[in-house]
Amino acid sequence: MSREHPSVLYIEDQPEMVDLVRLTLRRLGCEVVGATDGREGLALMRKLRPDVVLLDLMLPGSDGWEIRAAMLADEALRQTPVILVTARAPGVAPVGGRPLPPADACVTKPFSLGEIRSLVQTVLQQHAASYLS
Image (cartoon, rainbow, N blue to C red; front, side):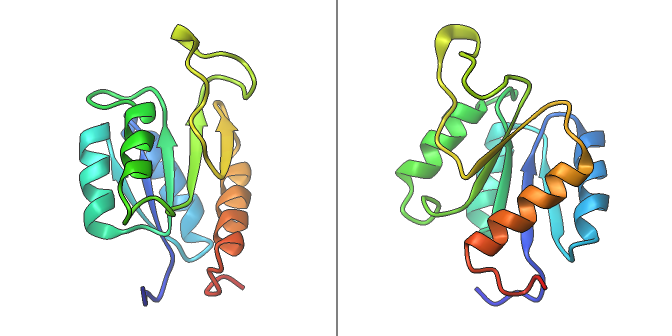
C-alpha cells in the first residue's frame, strides 16, 4: 500500500467524537475517515484498507464485537491494527459478560486526545508505518 499519509478509520456513533479525533490526528499527518455504525464501518474498511481502525464497541447496526469477528474472519482485514474505544475498563466484564475482543490497544472513554494520538502513533510504528517521523 503506497499512501503518502497513514489512514485511520474511526467507527464511532458520535460524529463529534470523530471530528475531534480527526483534528487531533491531522497533527500526525493522518487522514481520518469516520463511520457512524458498524455496517458502514466494515464496508469502508473493505474499500479503504486503513492503516489503523479505531473501533467503538457500542455501535448501532453491527457492534464492535461483530465487526472485530468479521475482521478476523476476513483474510484481507485480519492483520489490520485495531484500537478498541470503550467506556468499559480493560479487565472488567462488559454488559452480557462478553470479554473485550482481541486488539492491538484499548482506550477507555472518556479519553484525552493526547492519549489517542500517542496510541495511534505507537500502533502505526509497531506495524512498520515508516511515514511517521
